[in-house]
Image (cartoon, rainbow, N blue to C red; front, side, top):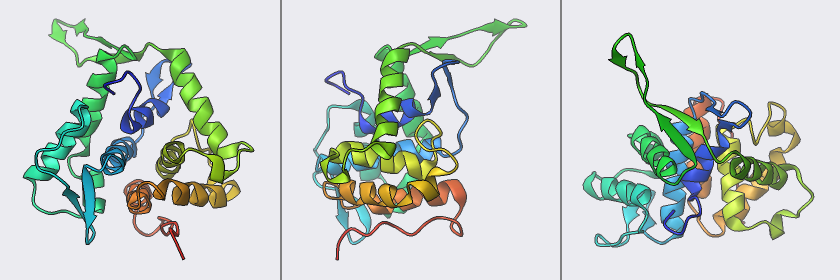
Length: 224
């Protein structure tokens, strides 16, 4: 987010906010999908590559310039080899908290420390840039439900919506959308995979993290 534009993991985090109440919607799939977004962006930038199913840094001296992404890149470098699916959930809260702090520093969120009964309560966050987040949520919803042909959707936008749908973020996908827009979600996953071939793997990993291995849908086809 060095140029002022939210990164993919930051946008996924913002999609989870209730803009009317300016509060974050509780969602057990939020940490995995934010981590999946960070993995996707690092791969899209060429900083992570796939080595027989293992997320592998391309260059041990490489940096993205984004502290959230660089924090994850350093974690991958210092860890033993892990498959992509493992990284979607492994220490995912670390990336979530880093994204939250980054968005607070950028003015999207306001951090409030409160005292009660003489004790300092945990920091509470309030959404500040409501209109910007509403615009982000509207665009994501239009990417899913609108008339624009999938072939004309930007690959980054396709990846955003594919990941949001995998996590079931309610500002993007409602309960009936898996059936009503299932084919379009798959097509968007394929579209996003043109730039980041591992996207289908992390999308499936997010679905598994949210719903369990028995109910997760199969990965989207990326070729053939």
